[in-house]
Length: 416
Image (cartoon, rainbow, N blue to C red; front, side):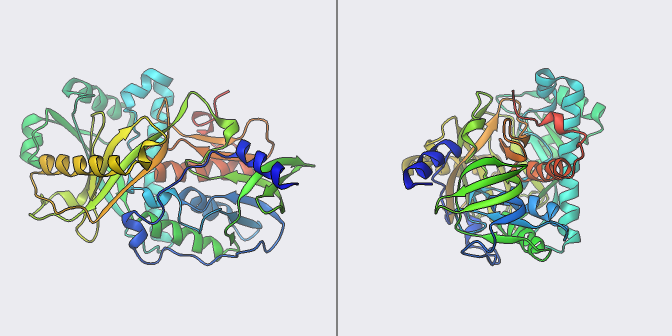
């Protein structure tokens, strides 16, 4: 393959994004590096995982069982992609409310999607404990506040349908929201079954676990093309090598496969901060994730060191995140919103960052076989539920590679 051919193949394969590497809060924390090969130790494997972020890490942990030869490659250093930009609010609540999703895909499917998301958070918390991962994983409750998108009536309909689905939701009116949380909003929903973690340490810990079961991690390796090869998949690299695998799984985050471009999927920009409070925070805050039914919506939580992690100001743009002026303006706006909501005074943020993320019209991710490419799978469109959906993706793809059918695979299949 000539240099020109490789360039053209790469242009057709993956949509690249100039992610803000090593600028997020998590990039400054310890235990986020993993050992890796700088050259391919082998040019064959049973399963090739492309991407070393949280979705790739969970995929590796699920697929490495001692009987499979699994390799992970990334064009960046491991654990240095979009997972560093997460605020790691591990919510069971999908960006699209349950009663809204019901109108989009039907009640039965909407309920299954929300139940699967809840179950994914529970199983992820259990997995982190079982593996003894040092990643600050903590179960949390969620406070969902009425806003300019959904008012009291909509939150009442939301809570009612969650009750039908067996999903925890306690509806509070304005008086109760003020009494319990000191926040003046027309209504709110309090729920269980969410969590938070250090996303970089979680990713690195999962990769190390998989390495203990035989995973080989190689960086920097960039996959530029995939082709069928007699029941296997041939993967070309940017430096002219070939990797032959039985199965290939693209876990490349927001850098999605070009052949999967769809009007149902888009790239959005978001901003986030880590900031220390000048004054005392509400006593309930450490145990909660907070977000609101507004556009753009604010979301926040506390980390173990007492910092408030907050984000929002999302824009329907794949490039806006790369604008330094927007970084300053939008993160300053997030600071002001947090201060107003919680009634606290904040220091200037000690970390500010911005990133793109994939979004879909239903709020549900795309997970499964890539149309037209046998034995090639991809996961994308994780929206604000990246870690939760990554757990679901690992379960769905593991079943597919094992020749089984995940019970909810139909909810996440790629659009025709």
